[in-house]
Length: 230
Image 1 (tube, rainbow, N blue to C red):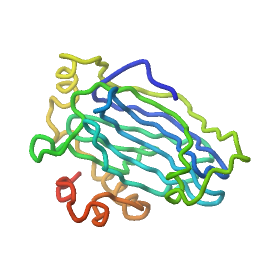
Image 2: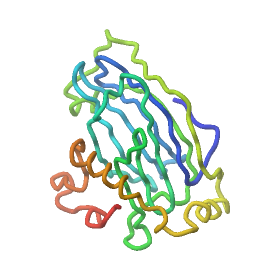
Image 3: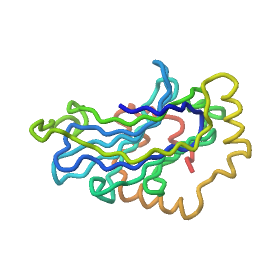
């Protein structure tokens, strides 16, 4: 695991990754932000490996105060093992946006004050990258195990860019909120072109959305599922 030296509240973090080629079943390559402690905040990019010839699953999630269950997953529209691709997490007081090569793929809007939906707002985070073994769940819900004869499994990272509000707790949280949300949320909307790009990705490559998994949640869907995200 690699962790950034800087801790921050709000901003954009990005890195370029070349995922494990060939049979990567059971591996999980990650790029994410997280605070410390059990009741942590976290914003995830996780790349779930697969058998040779089968696509990766791009797994996104957000935790607030230790509670997640906000998963959205995609199949890539490109080969993530053939060269580097850029992954960006943009976190502001208004929303979280996940980008791949500059294309937004998901938005999670802040409805904490208006609708009681937990949102990361006050815990400083670090940026992390890692690769780890998770054959019990990562590939086809654990049906496909890791072929250890294919080891080592190597993912390559190229650089990390942190355009963030550096903060280590205390009053700086409020200053960071003002810096990244002081003009209100209206000025932080995606452009029409970006909304079109995201809609294209979600229409064609989204394979899981917690907001439509009625069986998992026994029909008790999260309140944000009935609210606009962008």
